[in-house]
Image (tube, rainbow, N blue to C red):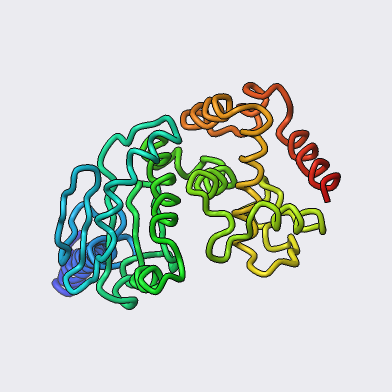
Length: 294
């Protein structure tokens, strides 16, 4: 069967259009992939993923005996170098050594900090153990509104734990214990906005209590707390739970519990293995003690 020239031309044109369409689609996919890679790269180098960047452009590195400080050009680092002397005490309390020197980051101004960090907290330690310090935290410390030493001990506790859990383990480590341990080991209760032990007990006796299992879950906001500073109270409450564990069973057993959790983050299982009772039963005893004392 003889095909007409017009038919043959239509086949050629159709084939050509299909190839062009395929080429355009592949080009579009390549452009999208390149755009995504560019965005991620920008976020890592200059944006919210900066805590996980291996490159720190615009920051000056100051390597001390026990820590490394990265200071953004134009930032004020007054008092930070003293952190170097805190390492031994943090290691002694936790009965653990840092695997590598903790890295602290200081920023030029609030705008730069907010651009580089997914957190707006005064201090933040990320799962890879890097510690970010806000300019307003340094200003508050300079004006004696907060204790820089205490806050840094708090963050160094997190950093030390994260170095031993790894990033995945850090995300699964019991959040209540992470904060309770940091507040307790740094003697933070009774400073700044954190209620002391007596005040925390009084607030708990009045019906205020954040169940550790609910903390940092969707149900956390459903827990009503009639306290002056919600987060500060919660942290002090968790520190009191740690304090009662140490008082009742001894620090050695607590350190054992803390260390096992570095590898196995199943809190209920590990707590039962170490203390011989259910975690919820312990909490019930803790709250009963407080009600009896108040």
